[in-house]
Length: 487
Image (spheres, rainbow, N blue to C red):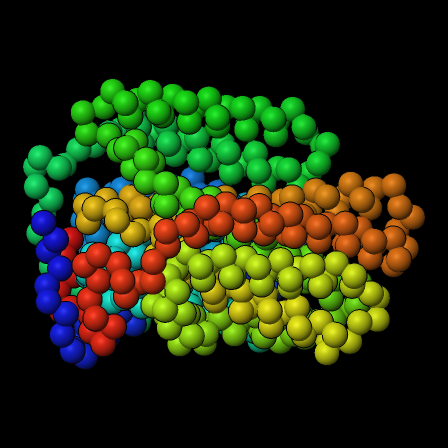
């Protein structure tokens, strides 16, 4: 039986939502700021190209490797406890990264920071999904949550550029101040939660170990795709070992009395479809943004700050997601809005395939604004689809699955465009024209990914209903959050 109390107007409940959204803003801005600062960090510490790449990849490994475990831990050990504990870990290791004096210290700090995000973010999301009754109220909360996360990434690009001008260490110290503010507010606003019932408690250590090891190896193998033929045996070995551990995990979960992941959850076709679509959408988005950043900085000679300001228009989703998207979802249903987002993404990335050396910003602007609008339409509704009809006691697991897929999507997108660019540029003469041709070739990858995503999401159109007509949906006017946040 749901423990969601009757929704009512409450300044405290909206303050709680603001705190939880602050977490996803923190995570998004942290990644973006570091992406802008990497060239400066590399020059200051004398890092090799490979070490600099692993500073970014270390976070992805930690996040992707432990998100599934983090989501289930929130269900089993308490969402409030997991949220507060791992927010503290995120704070500490972000600060340690600012004091790093060599590449390996940075890589270690970023890995643990990623692990902290893997536990913290699904806990925050599951607190939201268990605080709102399924329907328009929960949909609006998730859309705001997703919009704030996207806004954090977009603003993080600009903030990172500004902070890097002051000194790259501020890119690590700035999240510390925000983390402290969120932690203090969360201690006050997050209500105490009942301990999980003994019948529902279980610690599937074998499942947890095999899941974490499988995700780590698969993420490592995907990241290594960027190296193309270099160390191909290691890359294939990591991917094969990861897949073998996935198979072992399934066997363990089938036999476990209290499985880490109830395999029956994968019978929810809408949830699986949403996760696959999210993987493809996020992979295309980050792969596209990565190539555009290289085009502007390495080919056009723009500074990191100029590039960040140019790309901020893609952050229009931070405004559209909480204002426009809820209206569209309520009227047409999240499946149709997701599909519309994919169609816009296809148009946006397709327009950029004909990029030229001397394109003005005005010529690039339509692609950037359409890409941001596509993100606003697709990403938030995908979080709704990934958690709809999932039992309250498995909301942490649903959030963990979603973030596992999105992190793998980001890694796949960036690694795939990097690998394709490398193959396209390998036989060229290194001239600006040849580099531009290689970029155009790499830009085909995001287009293919959103085409596949559109095909996957199209299966959800049949029988899709507007949110306001879903069974048990509350009237649209009841959009307030409840005071209590059940654990």
